[in-house]
Amino acid sequence: MRMPSDLVAAFAPGRVNLIGEHTDYNAGLALPFATAAGITVQGRVLSDPRRFEVRALDLGEDDSFGIDVSEPGEGWRAYVRGAVGELQRAGLPLRGARLEIRGDLPRGSGLSSSAALEVAVCLAAAELADAASQLPGPAELARICSRIEHRWAGSQSGLLDQLASLCGADGEAVLIDFRSLAMRHVPLVLDDHRLVTLDSGEAHANATSGYNERREQCEQACELLGVSSLRDAGLDAAAGLPGPLPRRVRHVICENERVEQAVAALERRDWAALGRLLDASHASLRDCYEVSTPAVEEAVARLKAAGALGARLIGGGFGGHVLGLLPPDVDLPAGAMEVSPGKGARLL
Image (cartoon, rainbow, N blue to C red; front, top):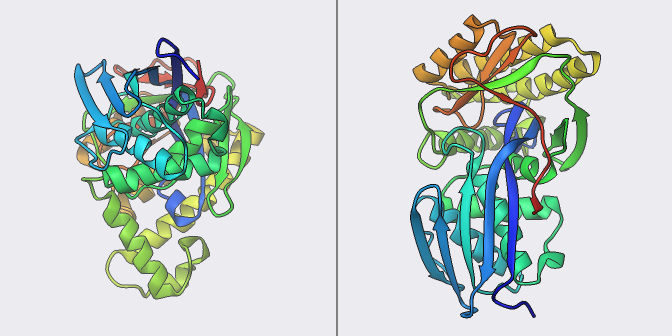
């Protein structure tokens, strides 16, 4: 039995999705990587085994709830409470704890701070209860975290963010097939090129943006086409769908193709081709999926003006950061941050 003085810490990284946006909940393909930045949750067991006391250090905010929590709370609290609730629903024996949260991922950036928070809380809470060995593997833990998003935060997101956070590796992206959940690490060796992100200045939140609406439109298209996912849809058949649905289908089908082409470009170190794929992904997200904004477009234009070979929005859209591929000897534009693949979630 752990004594109340025992202390644990868990870290979960954010992620940058190189390419493959809005494909995860359509049983498609994506190529994300974990970042060095992320969320750290430090925990100590409480003498009261049925209470959680939580402090978000960066925000100066607190929360307190019972172990049988059922109400989500506001903002970040929904993810912490949801982690406790969903781990218990999955049968893990938790005990009360004091948790302190800190991180260096900007919220609403498209770098997946919410998934990092969920994963880090799950790892810390399980370790504090001597239940880490009972945690499921990455695929099922990602599903647990996805249920936190759905049931507690109101975002109908897929599994991309959680799998990227859990399965990241130094120097590698992760090619994920969301139909089978098969994963393959792909070396991200850029020959002095750099991947950078730039904040559009506009925060986004999946639950309150058009994200859930886009997912509903994809489900509607599947129903009308008689397929289980847009992975199985055809462009010719989709052309007869009503309203914006043909454009949504086109984005998903072509984005899956761009993921495969991006892996091939990385393998042959064709940076010009990779840049063109980033540009094409952004154009599709803007024109077919309609998740860009004027602020995002301005950020993309700034990266392109600085010499980026390609640039696109990342994350759910409607704000957040954009990603650019800079050639060697090109200066970062003001406010841009270089990103590179790092390790996945872990106990510290």
